[in-house]
Length: 173
Image 1 (cartoon, helix red, strand yellow):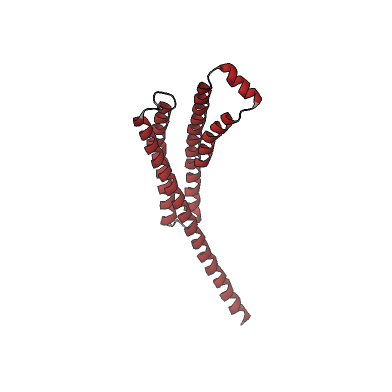
Image 2: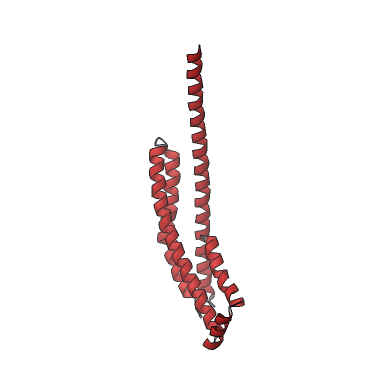
């Protein structure tokens, strides 16, 4: 999602650098290209904020499904459920604590004079950095959880195969 958001903002700049003939004529007719640039960046930023909200909602749903699956599929082992719970808490913190502030700070800095003020830009960048770190922490927890589940599954499968081999060796005697 972070890659999509970065590319969305960069696309605006590349689109204006090489507009189509129709877009160039429209920009020339509308007068100020700076106004069009501001509106396009604002639209991309609003779209990114919407994508972020949708991603958080999707993470809630995925986390709940994952938690239920872990509860039913891992013989109620505590480690996977704690990892899933931590990831859900991180999403909740992002949704309640960081995203609203990012939205407010972002809208404050989308247009001048806020886009030139240092305070709002620093606050928005700091909150974006916290958001990115939490996303990274969730990714690390997810990788650890997946690794644990693969190891747990492989260990269980190996035990099942050993039990089958032992039962067949008793039958062959």
